[in-house]
Image: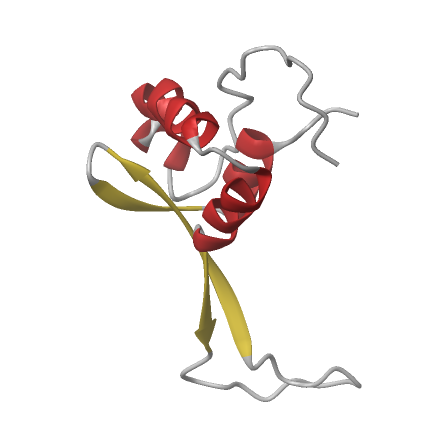
Length: 102
């Protein structure tokens, strides 16, 4: 529920340490990302913005798996907009960036 209470300014979180080096790619963009996000006038628009960062991609080449698990049919691509460019980042980067403490 959106209560309208003030929260502490978000800052860059820990490094995800992935092979995509997404932490380094968007290092200088965190303030801009958060500013744009918090300028959105409603919680619904903020949620829509976050969902827009995730793109579902269907698996093009399916490999057979052994065991009881079925083959994956899709995966998700996570992106952020930085200086007018859409940059692909890992799931952990999104998680560390937008994590809300309770």
